[in-house]
Amino acid sequence: MRATGYLFVALAGLACVAWAEDLLFPYMHGLKYSEYDIAIKQGHTAHVCKDEAEWTSMTTADFAKYKAIVIPDCLCNSSLATVDFLDASKSVWSPAVTGNMIIIGTDPSFHAKWYNLTGAIAMMQDAINLVASKNGTGMYFSLSCYYQAASTPVAISALSEIGEFMVRGNLSHPCLNDAHLVAGSSVMTSLKDSIASNWNCSVHEAFTSYPRSGPSGFEALAIAVNASGPGQQEFADGSRGIPYIIARGATPLGCGNNITEPAYKEECDDGDANGTPESLCSSSCRCVNGVLEPGVCRPNPTSTSSRSTQSTPSRYIEATDRLRRLLILVTAPRAA
Image (tube, rainbow, N blue to C red; front, side, top):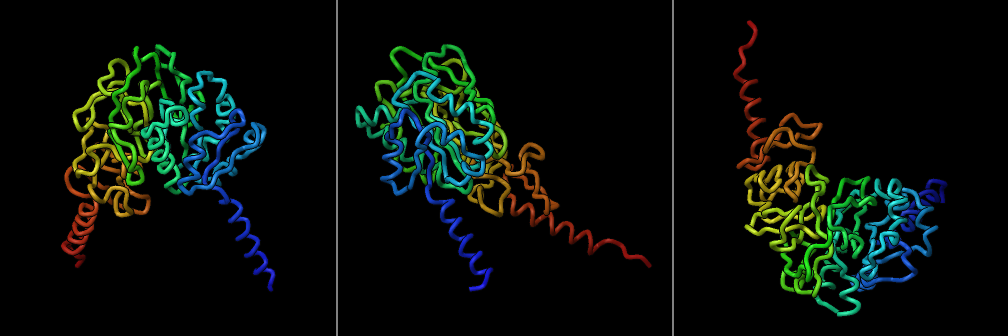
């Protein structure tokens, strides 16, 4: 075998090692939580750090080898010190997280382990599928009960490298129990309003603000219905509430109807073309290259045309632009 052949085999072996597991779990009290069990049952492979030292020794490239990082619900743990390791290492792992993300303001592992709630199991199934479904490393992060006592909005320090996320707890006594999904994905097929609600305490933390603009913006995925105060929003189906689950990579209600609706933070809408190579509009109705002007996405660097999404799919507008330039060329006066 030639040297190049040996090199090819060696590189192929390294590639197999790099993607040996789909999901990365940190060391958290040495336990494996329901998220781990569910991931394995769904056919994912997973690596659990043997201790915090293993996590802290990892580089950005190490984190980027996984389809997703999973920070599980630590069984309604209210001690923020539980995720100190995540905060301390955020400058290393954050750049690796370029895929879908989901942040959950409740404790699904607790409700699955102790009450075997169908909704808690479905929530973890769908969330793990979402974050592991896209090119680039995703992230699942359950806020467990870390912020449930926060009566005023507080920043999630561990996520500050990704954006500013503000949450509050102390929402209601008894707890908020009426949940409603306001976004979805083709890989999220299990969770419904009926089983996301009535957990005795369905919502522990709600988001008062979070990054919402651009291709890396987050969508409200589930809300505490009719919850009032900081963070309350109105959604495309007329519902009102405060988001307690947010996601990057989900499709909000109303997105995909070929009408750009700024009232719901849409930057574009190419209908069925959203998220396809022929559109500059993502499946979340965000301009993938940024906004040129309201309803118009910034073109690709190799393109000379912008794509408007007010009422006409961008692919048709781009074709019209090409035709217009051709007509100008044909009708231009020639030198004598």
